[in-house]
Length: 299
View 1 (cartoon, rainbow, N blue to C red):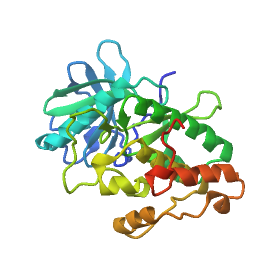
View 2 (view 1 turned 90 degrees about the vertical axis):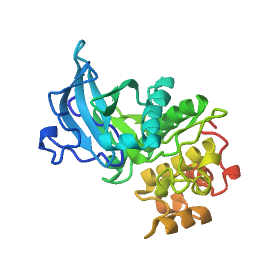
View 3 (view 1 turned 60 degrees about the vertical axis):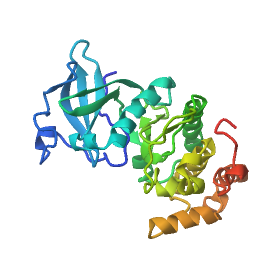
């Protein structure tokens, strides 16, 4: 079935626009709707834009396949780390073939534009869904089992995501009244666990999202292991069931401190239909001490 509405989950690319030609101060110059990119894609319309780039819906010039093209703004080319992270996302996603992980087909560099070609998805992000309220218990469990299966597959390829959050999970619209299929997206800051691989993190940067970040990830981005993703998944499931993140505060520093202290209100006290066993599972996943969490997502 031809997708009728598509998006690629990204925290800063959530504003829809009918046409790229309507965007003011076009940083791409002559790159606009109808233009060709990479010698093989025609830009059809813009799906979203943000601080780092634009996502287009595009069609392959030969076979007509519709894809989502994620394009990095040209001025980011000057930042070596940004370019390396951009193409790392393609390399990481291409190593994992799983129904709950985004597929990346292609990438390139033309007209001073770096681009990735991804599968075109019809639906909404988990973040957008949670803005309407918490999920029904059975639906939340079913969706998160699939999310965790996708993340476990990523881990088994030696990759730690490091930025798991509702906006980086896309819920693909069901065909016939079934539950949506979740897809894990956005591997731009993921870490490959390979000896000798250079870490792409500057001394003053924090990699991840404060509301979902494990305490050890704040202290040392280089030392994180899969248990950091376990923590993020626990926070996401807490939010999906309660309707709010476990730790909210007025500043990023206060959020980090609350995560480090722990002690979130147990889920079964926030929501009566949550079984105690499930509340305990989420509490363990969110333990501030990584050694007390589940050792893996698969576990």
